[in-house]
Length: 216
Image (cartoon, rainbow, N blue to C red):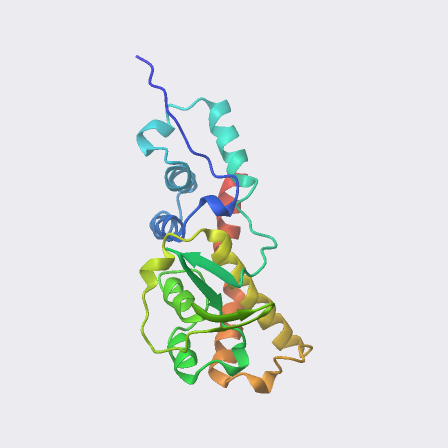
């Protein structure tokens, strides 16, 4: 008897949560030398297709699914979203990185790199805090108090997370080229500059890896 499967195929990174992405990355690491298994994991985590049914797909259906995922999987340009609403609370991105509280710097720089991994939700909870005042393009956020609740970011879509990561990509590029006036090299603590440099080689590494598997 044939069984009908209903799949929810994401068309943008808005359709994928941070939890889905992290779970996928963790599983991909365990099968990094098995291309077929990695594609199966992507179909499972992103489309909800159980591994047991993947081999039953027709070649045409399998190729179409890969093509649909390939359309959005590599986030070429995603802008920073300065405001994010979670459970009715509006959170704002740190308005001025160069004047961020020392405690926030210290908590971020305990990580060797800035990338989307198991620590990313904690970094997001440091960078985004409840908005306390807002007027036009100007706004202020709650002072950093060291309390971190990374769980709230697990259900936030990946477009928000990529936008925040790319902010640091651009910041790193500007720092290395020495052309950013508002955030000059000397305006950032050495620890933050070091992290930005270390993160450079890892930027977009995960998305490029996903693209490589889908092209095969």
